[in-house]
Figure (cartoon, rainbow, N blue to C red):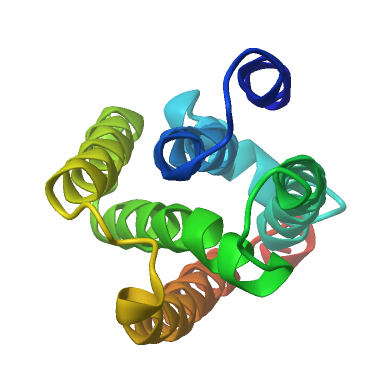
Length: 187
């Protein structure tokens, strides 16, 4: 994504169209994170990971932390690249890019918390594609979506999605804590 953004900035004049393209592709980065969260369930390794020295919750939180840092680094890099090429400030540009990402995170973690099957990653992929298409269609249909007229909408959506995502992450962590198990508990 970073290389694609760099190429787009180099070959094309940066405008709102580049912003919505980048913000429509950005949710696919979180799909990689969701597949990492589901890796244990997909390969039926969650029970084995629960019996290890470091329990399933610790392993999953470390995975989430590493992927979150990587996603944050990509986001900051893209923000820095686009900052000098647009009239938007750092804050507004960040909200435009992060809001679809948060919508996808909320939708995917909502699915993970509700479905317990090996095919959950496919449902998360559908959620990601829907968020991407929704973002692209809204940018195409509403020509001035990235203007001051809609700034309060973007801020409200960002705050609501951040709160809902945190709520779903806490629910995911709570469910993982319930699954704590190790061989010393059975003796």
